[in-house]
Each structure stands twice: as structure tokens, then as C-alpha cells.
Amino acid sequence: MNQDNSNKKVTARDVAVRAGTSKWTVSRAFTDGASIAPEVRDRIRALATEMGYSPNLLARSLSTRSTGLIALVADELANPNQLYSLNEATRQLQARGLSTLLLNTSPEYRPAIALRLADQFQVDGIMFLGTTLTHELIELAQRIKHIPLVVLLRNSGQADIPFVSTDGYAAGAEIADLFLAQGYRRIGYMAGPMSERTELRRMEGFRDRLSACGIALTTVMETAHYRREQGMHALQRYLAATPRESRLEALFCENDILAIGAMDALVAANAQRKIAIVGFDDIEMAASPSYELTTFRQPVEYLVGEAIRLIVEPGSASSRALMAPGSLVLRASHRRQD
Image 1: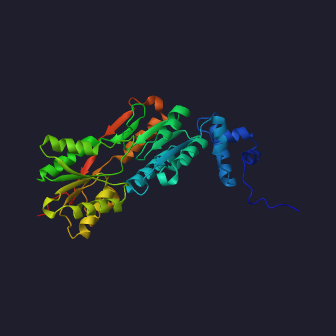
Image 2: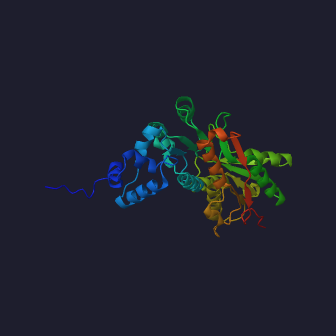
Image 3: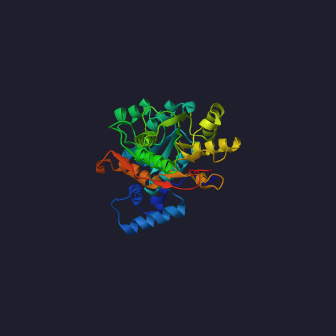
């Protein structure tokens, strides 16, 4: 009785038999830069497409000692800008023929397990997009496996760990100038979660520019996560505890999703536009007519490209730290409402 082979996986040997070549010739046909006549390569690839064959990348990695797999490490996936950055990273990595392994290192998901996966899959590099760069990740990447590690969109906080980021200090100073030009004097800052080893430098630049102009940063609100409800609850607590005549005139939020939460708190308190709000990142929702959020746009596409270059071409890097300028996006939320 004949077995039904319709669901049998096509192998390199099957393609070789049809092509009248060896299995190793088929392998070379799918290896960039391999020595093989162009007409032979094209014929083998055409046959492979017809037969439904695709090369086994995991098997190939055993012989090349390279998996072509880059780990993307994140811990605030509720933050829309992190999702946007992950999308851009996967797009650019796939364009280079590389694959991605997404690791969620949020505390509730046991980050140690995620890091063990990076080890077990033998990733060729790690791109860190999270808020807290843990000792465990540094040990895995640098001390144990010597895996290239690059921090994206934040300073790494360590001289031996490269990073690519927007110049947060300069951005903070620019936003301070924007508020001062509007005539605000009672000015505050809403911060995201505290980080052990990564830095944004936005608050420092903001505070220092205000101080240089004789204005104190009067209030700093802290949130546990980059989530809309965190921004909303933080400002609601502030409004409840502060007399109307003493309240802030302007608030710089560490990112857009916190700023949007803060604006929702003002709407809920029937105080819409009573406090000027500026965010950071320029997520899609920032441009909504419901918010018209003034914000600071990061050059994410460029920064992702530079992070990938540091991973795949480490010897070509002239610097282990890159800080790029961003751009202020003016809408309506920063303006004085009389």
C-alpha cells in the first residue's frame, strides 16, 4: 500500500535529485556569496520554488556558527512608542535577512526565563529597548557569551555598552525654552519608571535650562509604568492635593502616553487646557484632534539602523555612543489658555 507523501517536507536532497546535482550544490545556491555558476543557482532556485522547498536556517547555523537571530529585549510593551520601535527594528532586520526573537523582561513575566531563551537560541546580537538594563542581561551578553549588545533610545549608563539615542538633554532644554517663551513660571515634570542602568536625560536638560533662566522645577510626578492610566492617575492625585491657585501652569511628560493620560485627567476634572502639556515621541495618537499634543519626535528609523549596524558590523563603529537630534512638533497643547 503506497503512503500519501503529499504532506512530506521537501528536503535539499529531493531538490538535488530533480536538479541532477549534489545536496551541497543546493545548499550553495541558497548561500549568499557561495561559489556557484549563476545559471545553476537560478535553475536550482526555480526548482525549489516549484517543489515548495526552503532552506533550513537552523540546520545551516550549525555549520556557520551564526544563527542570524537578533534578540529584541523590551519591558514596557504597553508603551505605543516601544511597539513602533519594535516594528521598525523587525522591518530593518528582516530587510538584512536576519530574524528576530522578542523577549519580554517585564518583572511579572520572569525576565530570567527570557534571558535563558536568548542563551539557548544562541542569538548573534541583542538590541535592548527596555527601561531597566539588568545585571543578568549584561552578564549574559558581555561576560559569558560575548554577544554584541546595543541599547536603543536610551543611554546605557555604562562606558562599555554602546547605545544609540536621541539627545534627551538637548531636547529637555528645548522644551523648557518653549514653556518659558509662553510665559509659564510654575512648571512641572512627569517621570516614567525609575531605571537602574539606563538614562533618558530629558528631565536633567529640562531642569537645568529652567534653572539657568531663574525658574525652579517645582513639581516632579513619578509613575510606575509608561501607560495612559498611570499618567492620568498621577495628575489626578496632584489636582486633588493642590489648591487651584497654586497649580502648575505647564507640565512636561516623559513620553506621549503619559501626556495623553494627563490630558485625560484634565478633561475628567473639567479643566481641559488649564495646564499646558508637552510629551515626547510623537506617537500616532498625539496628532488626534482630541489631544493636539505638542511633542518631541525621535529619529527612530535612523537610530534603529545605527543600532543594527553596531551589532552586525561591530568593527566598523567609530564610536560606542551616538546621540542624534530630534525635532519639536508644535500643535496646540503647549499654548497658554486664558
